[in-house]
Image (cartoon, rainbow, N blue to C red; front, side, top):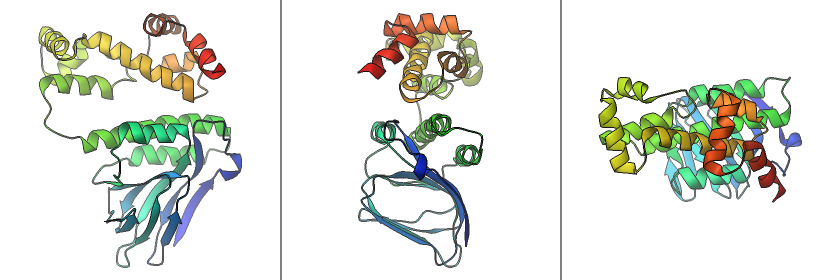
Length: 270
């Protein structure tokens, strides 16, 4: 067996909303076995290949290729590879208030595995960021925090997969493109509905126009970035694909009541 491990234990800062403890990739063998009891840690582990067993909080699960298993704070767990076809897996270990929020807000309690959910690109990006020696630890945490949010939303949507109504299809289309630049014509192209139909149906179902909903969701995500990352206001504006920083600031103030800078300053002074 061999592993590539990037450790950040010595850099963890309890003042940060999230700390990245370790990340890595493991090429397991039949002797691979990890056991923990009640540690203050979370992790995502994506199975690239192979199979094995996870025993966690009285559940016995069998993660295999393309599955994600999750280890949660204060859990009792042991996991190990099969002898015939051991795991190759990519993983990240983290903790903090933001981790607690993401799990409680978006993922069902006592859920420790999501079957057939490919998050390799996100996990590989975390691994690449971890190996970039030029990054400061706060910058690493900021970028990994964004990727963890994307992973959680992907897991949530995968778990909730169902036949969606037209209104739900419109809402999902807006939600998954929240960081992109998108208008109603793009939604028409993606879903094959007319503009008038989309606006009327969405307003009847959710009490708000698609445009107003999309802008509101962008500002909600901007609030999370302002609270939980070191990204500048201009960087957040660019990440969320606003036309420019001035439009971002005016949109933010129209919804939140204060400018992005004032919001961050007030939140940190509490």
